[in-house]
Amino acid sequence: MRPPRTSPVTVTRVTVASSVFLANIPSPDRGVWQLGPIPLRAYALCIIAGIIVAIWWGERRWAARGGTPGTVIDIAVFAVPFGLVGGRLYHVITDYQRYFGAGRNPVDALRIWDGGLGIWGAIALGAVGAWIGCRVKKVPLPVFADAIAPGIVTAQAIGRLGNYFNQELYGGPTDLPWGLEIYRRINEAGAEDNLNGVAVNHIPIAVVHPTFLYELLWNLAVAALVVWADRRFRLGHGRAFAVYVAGYTLGRTWIEMMRTDEANHVAGVRINVWVSILVFIGAIVYLVLAKKRGEREDLAAIQGNVPPDADTPAESADTDKSADDDSDDDAEDRDDDSAESTAESDDEPADEDEPAEAEKPAKAADADADASSDADADANANANAKADAETGAKDEKAKEPSSSGSTDV
Image (cartoon, rainbow, N blue to C red; front, side, top):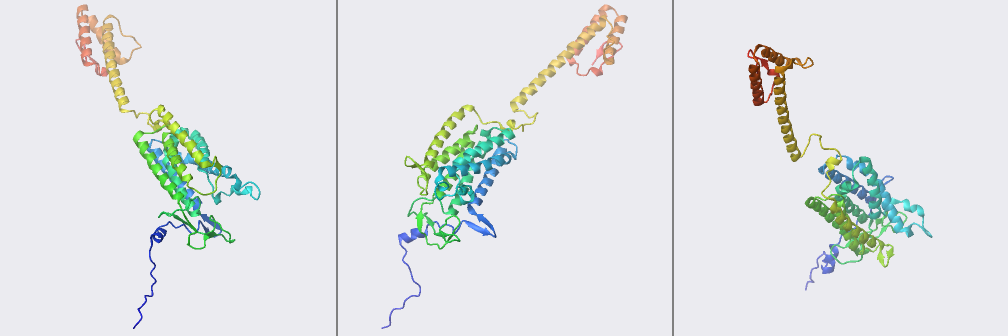
C-alpha cells in the first residue's frame, strides 16, 4: 500500500490569538537615520513639521479674521524659541532625577535631541514669547491665541509621531488588535537604546497600549472642536484658546494615567495628571468669564486694515442722509443770502470788497432803482426773492442783468 503523500508546504493553524497578534501595530526599527555625519532624528522632524503646520494654519485663520498677513510668522519668531526652552525646562524640573544626583551628568539636561519636552512648559514660556511678539506687532495676545489654537493642538498631534519612532511613552500590556509592538533596540556600543538604537529583529518583546496614538487622535478631535465652536459661537477674547486647553487637558488626564514610563508622583498620582486637572479647571473658568467681554474683536480695525472711507452700511446711510441735509441747508442759506442781497441792493450800493460777479446784480439793481420809482423797486425785489426761492439758486454764475432790472436764473 502506497503511503499518503505529504505536502511540501507547512500549514499553520490560525487561532484567535494569532489573528490578534497579526493585527498589532509594528514599531519602526529605528528613530534616527545617519546622513553622513549628520543624524536625522524622526522626533525633531515631527516637531518641526508640527511647528510649520501651526504657523501655516494660524496665518490662514489670522487673515480670515481680518488681520495683516505675516503677523503670525513674526510673532512665532519669539514664541517658538521660548516654547522649546520652556518645554525642556519643564521636563528637566519634573524629571530632575535623570540629570542630577549620584551618577548623573547635569550636561545631559541640554541634550534636547535625546527627547524630553513638557507641553506645559512649552505653552507657558511660549505664551511669554508670544506676548512679546504681540507687543511688538501691537496686537492683543488673546486675539493671537484664538487664531493659532487649532494649529497648536494639531502640531502636538504630529509631534506624538516622534514618540512612536522613539518607542517611548506607551501604556501597559494589552491584547487589543491595535496593540503596539515594542522591539529590542541596541546602539553601536551594543547597549539597549530605544532612542538611538536599531531593532535587532521584529519579534516583539511586548505588546502595549499605543498611548501616542490615543493622544494623536484625541488632539485632532480637539482641533475640529475648536474650529466648530469658533464658527458656531464666534469666539473671541481668548475663548477659542480656552476651548483648546480644556479639551486637550481632559484627554491628557486619562491618557496620562495609562502610561507606564517613569514619572514623579504626588499623592500616588503622576504629576502630569495633577497639572492637567488644574489647567482644565482654569480653562473652564476663563471660558466662562471671558464671555462677559462681548463679541469677537474686530481684528481689521485693531491692525488698521479698514480703509478710511470704508464705512458700514448703516454708517454710510447716515452719512448720505447727513450730506443731503447739509445740501438742503446750504441751498436754503443761498436762497436767503440771495434775497437779502437783492433787498439791500435797493437801498445802498454794493460793497467794493465783494466779488465782481456779485457786483453786477447789485449795480443793475442800483441802476433800476434810480430809473424807477420806489414802488417799482419794491415789486422787483419781491419778484427776485420769489424767483430765487423757487429755483434754489443752484447756479449763481449764470445770473445776468436784464433791461427791466430783475435777475433771471
